[in-house]
Image (cartoon, rainbow, N blue to C red; front, top):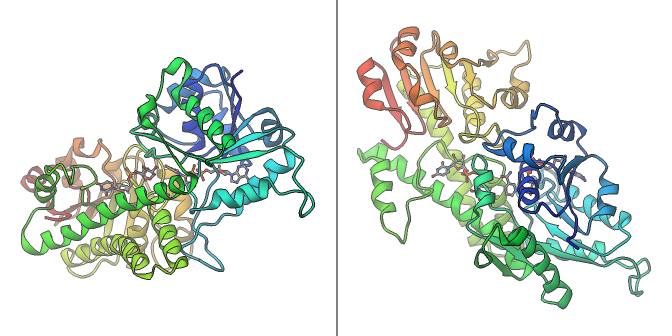
Length: 468
Ligand code: NAD
Ligand code: UDX
């Protein structure tokens, strides 16, 4: 009998991951639960107005919702009904007390563990899907398997805690889930632990082995699995900061960062991916996970390692400050009351997610300079409005940013277009029409190096790029 699955947390991870698990395991019932009733209502919306935008997600949800995938706010019933509990709640950076600004805030995580224990009447496999500090599974196991009285053996249900971190990237989540480079399952090296790992491996193998080939399902001990997730994100973030550090040098010397990256990446030891210079990394994971690693290093007295990883975040912040510095210089050292149209607010293309987006930080820096800002984005405008609500209030000295659907409208009368997200639509716009509607001299700062800069110059724009 295949075991039913519940995932606690219906966010960017819980929703897409469980939709694909349900697709590839039509013989298992998969439930996704959340305390956020609006989110669950959106997952259940009759016209599939899902709470997150992700290419290909709607098709998968249309296929499986109501068949073997169910979204609900009834967390307790779902826990009772299922033998496998994935936990995909948020683990943001802690903003108070010890470890503030670095450590993970584990309060949602612990609340979930206590609830699973309180509700359960049968043994369960509990799977960490969230990204967590190393040894969180030990804390989780202590809470779940704690006896009612000290010294007594727990006579309630037994819980086996595994780590199964998720490596999908937003914008490509469905493809990453359908064809993962690897699936990682960390478990205790005990008979129950090994049986639990085999059970979760069979979920990823899919019905009749239709999904992830066995050789791509990697198993480790729990601590290695927890640390691998932080380490993988730190390595990727480090590559982005490294190429951005080279970009500054390219601007100073006349080298071209895209050429440098292309030739460096041709060395198979370096590889071509994650060498795109730009406005710095955003997204909910990289900064949070690198800071978490910094905190872990500090906790274990590894101060030089902590400083090393902290440099990755510092370099990233610096990259956004450099964008504003260069705009300043190029726009005659005064930005007050000039109009800048920000093209793209999402942290990358193909998502509406704006968490830690470089555009957010740059817009705030420009707002401090009293720039008139108009923001356009095909998918992220409602998140942008929410994120920037504090600088959109009436009565502030700086003009409130405007949010505009149509990029041509956003650019009208602007002194500069600042391209922050590499949406595919932007290179295909009618840039001559945009130029005609702007104040002169008209500037384009393409922080993603995705536009045809020669063509823009021919039209009459002044053009800035990153690393050129
Ligand atoms: P999210 O904020 O989109 O979703 C988390 C959900 O958990 C929210 O809807 C929240 O309401 C719910 N939640 C919080 N406490 C709860 C509780 N006690 N009971 C039920 N629901 C509860 O976050 P996310 O982006 O999905 O990230 C979740 C975890 O996955 C994080 O640890 C993150 O680091 C990790 N992760 C995220 C990504 C990504 O691309 N977003 C990739 C890999 C790993
Ligand atoms: C990342 C990891 O890639 C994924 O494995 C993990 O599960 C979650 O965190 P995500 O943040 O969704 O995924 O997107 P990713 O494609 O990694 O991009 C992160 C940021 O780095 C974006 O802002 C992107 O624009 C930037 N980036 C990426 C660059 O600036 N240059 C690059 O070469 C690659």
